[in-house]
Each structure stands twice: as structure tokens, then as C-alpha cells.
Image 1 (cartoon, rainbow, N blue to C red):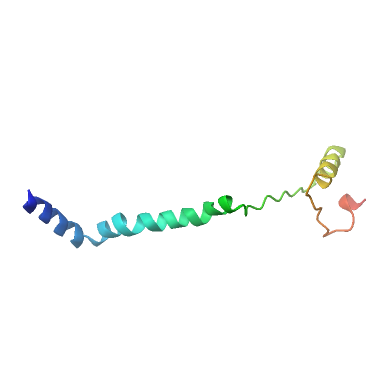
Image 2 (image 1 turned 45 degrees about the vertical axis):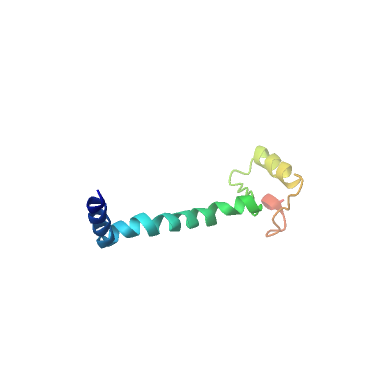
Length: 85
């Protein structure tokens, strides 16, 4: 039994791709996902909303007005008037 386990272990350590995929890749994938999704636990998620009004209809104007007056919102000041008004 020990001879079989030793032969398997020697074969495993000789296979570089197997060692990397088994021992090195899982911690790297874990760190990658922790970096991506860890911002949610810290509360650092940017929840910006952008409204591009290409139609310029009264409905989209009402949507802009509703978003502009939402609590904690700050309308974009890149143009002086919205929809040329």
C-alpha cells in the first residue's frame, strides 16, 4: 500500500502541470474572486445611474426629473441644460 502511494506521489510531483493546477491555481482563483467581490462586503460598490435621452420624449423627461430629485442623487453638470431646455 505504501509503495503504491509513494509511486503515485512521485508521479504527481513530476507532473508540473498537475502540481500547478492542483496546488497553485485554486488559491489564485480564490484571491481573484475575493478581490472582485470583496468590495460588496466593504460597501464600496458604485451604484451610479446614467440616463441617455436620445428619444427626447415627455416620458424620458419625467424619468430624468424623477431621478434628479431622488434622495442622494447628483445630476450630471456636464451640460448647462438638460435636453436643450
